[in-house]
Image 1 (spheres, one colour):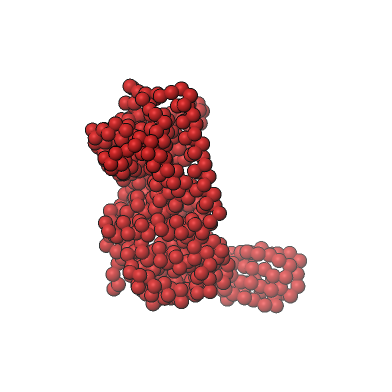
Image 2 (tube, chains in turn red, purple; image 1 turned 135 degrees about the vertical axis):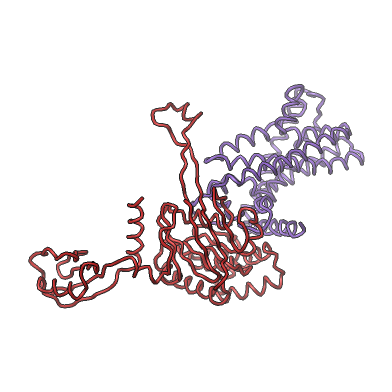
Length: 332
Length: 264
């Protein structure tokens, strides 16, 4: 069994802010406003083993970024315990910083007016690396992340995809044992996303770097992460291997049926089958496998339509995740 | 400690390099600020020539005062310009990047950017202090006191600036509040030192430490007053320690934010 490098127990974080009291005067609101408290993270616990690739996902406002910020020492928890590589981020922030790397997709930590090599040097000095270590590590990362063609350009002149590759490369200058990535593929095109995901898998395999990632992009989760933790309303709602995610929670198979001729009407379907999409030459049906199997469903619907082709497939991960978000939102 | 100092020096060098990449803007900032300051000192000297001495202050003292305040402000807000940017760093969530740094938090923030316009203040401050020392025909001990008092005033100004900027952690929209508090501290420091007598002198020495960065150092040099210098040293240490304690408490209030930003 691999060692646990992140241990989170009963972690909570609340934020307080003042709100306008309805019916109160401007002066009263100014002097004694009503204080409202919201719970961003509510009693969550989980563990991460060395070398894992974790997707920490949830809808907007679920508490993902707040949790990452507590794990990295940016925010102080209201309650609970955190241990990252044996350090408590609230008290050992500086010592922990030497062992972890962080990338926030919506923020840059590079010098905008200088080439990326200057940022490599800056972060190398910040992490107390010698000149020789900085030079060799920079060369290694430039090659690994394919940065050579634009390494001498000022950062502000780079494309978003180039900049994100550079951001991640720079955050690895000190060979961190864990890298926290908060939406690293935000705004990237499909090619840049694919390249970034491949690079992250590469550093996970070659340097044994643990990856802890938040993203709204299902592609990041599917192609990069071996385990997914879903958080909603500040609580962990699912924690399981990514490839089991779609199998375990959705009981529907989808049927794309191409029609030979436009039907006169769309008949009512037997129990367990429902329309997802109705077009003149194609319909999509969802079959609830708890009610009937796919072959039974096909036998029941074929008499209704003149069919030229049928495609049977599982629900995609995006739908699974969306259904989970919606289910946990309703239950709350 | 050595690593912290080495990194701080390196960060300052890197920021100057980054800032100097935009050469035109850099030199316009430097010269613009110098011209702005020159107009200010001309105004005060003209006032003294018109109304005569106030509270025993001469034209030389005005040069000394403007020199001290400009030099101290210029040094802190050029190499430690990050302190001035704390409201934006905190409200926009960019403060995160300093909390994940393995270096001393305050040093990292202060040296995170370089204020080119404040370089103009540094040049102007040095010129004014040289003029002041020449006008008072300074003795060797007065020249020595000047160097020590510049360091003492720097400690006080840095401490008070840290304390004021720490207020940012307690408000959702902190920029206006900290700007007002800073103006309350800084603006009186530029006023004619002789005008502060009795209660106002007490208030702006012990409650609002405006006189500690210019007026009192100049008086200590002109009068060759070592007790006054000692008082300034004690008060500078007090303000610095208080600011460190307050900053440490304030950081715990940081709530981060998720605004989209670009740039180091």
